[in-house]
Length: 260
Image (cartoon, rainbow, N blue to C red; front, side, top):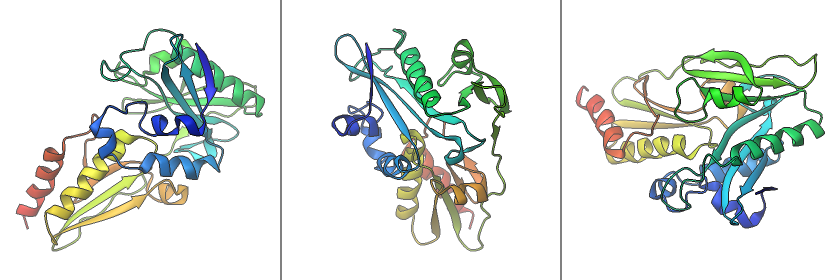
């Protein structure tokens, strides 16, 4: 296997998380590409893994923690490391060491750039971005929000641990209408998918539904709210993991519409 830096040749695969076969990735729109173009100027790095058969099989993205959704200094944050794990398309390529190779390559890269440590997030449940996997690679817990753990690996003694930036406020219900607030950072197509479905449903349900788009790739906007991604209907969050179907999102908004 080999690990390479992202080049223009592979950008389209990266933008859809190596899932060109997925109609849902197309439905998620171009938010990831927009996020990449913006964040590349702020230090975003992307590496890809190619397996022994020459198949583009995995990816990792990481950026200065000061540009991320967590609080820290002189560290790099990993929003995502992913090895294709579906039977469709490339097939399930997990369990072959590609994720480890990507993580080690990213760590070596940021050490050369003078970073004092690496940060990642992981879930306490064995679903995706497992915290236990990062722990096996030398990361330890720095903070926690529910089932989401913030983990880090300091490289030097004076590195300071990162912290989650917690929610600071939430959208409020407006009188006389259904208020739908869509927060979109752009880094994750799965999150963007829920955003796009809510936007589409809001438009279809008429003038009594007001959709507000909040771009949290602007860090000042993110810091104002403390919310990176999410859809709120009259101030209540729609659960987005895994992304709810369009029908479910539309039904949720229509239910609020029926109460007016």
